[in-house]
Each structure stands twice: as C-alpha cells, then as structure tokens.
Image 1 (cartoon, rainbow, N blue to C red):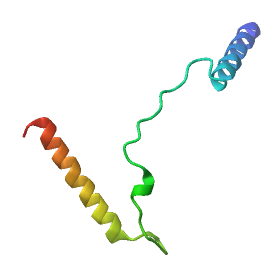
Image 2 (image 1 turned 90 degrees about the horizontal axis):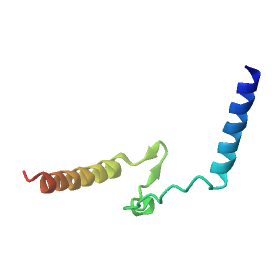
Image 3 (image 1 turned 180 degrees about the vertical axis):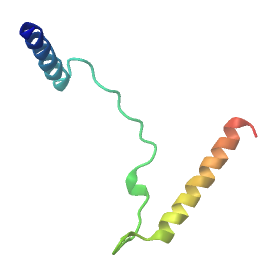
Amino acid sequence: MMFVFVVVAIAVIACIALASVGRLGELPEAPIDRKPAEVGFDVVVRGYRMDEVDEELGRLRARLAAHEQGTTGQ
C-alpha cells in the first residue's frame, strides 16, 4: 500500500513540475475588452464616490440592455 502512495506522490510532483515550466501546454491569453484604467473613480475616506460608481453602473446597464436587445431580436 505504501508503494501506491509513493508512486502517486511522485506522479503529482512530476505533474506540478511539468505544469510550472509550461510543458503541459499554456493557457490562452485572456481577451481584454476594457482596461481597468479607463474607469477611474475618485477615492474618498470610505472607498469610492458612490455617485460616480452609480453613474458607471447605469451606463453599463444601458449598454448591456442595448446589447441584449440587439442580439435577441426583441
């Protein structure tokens, strides 16, 4: 039984080593459609200004609704 654990442990260590050097393939680059720097909020004592965040969320909701209507044909 101990032999099985040793073999499994060696296999796990080998897979981790191969993955860390990229031998098991690489993940594709994540598509970036918007840079975080494009949305800037003023920082206040307790985080960001709520009115600025609310305005941005409103714009994003409107864009999402327009996109959904355009793709669903409603």
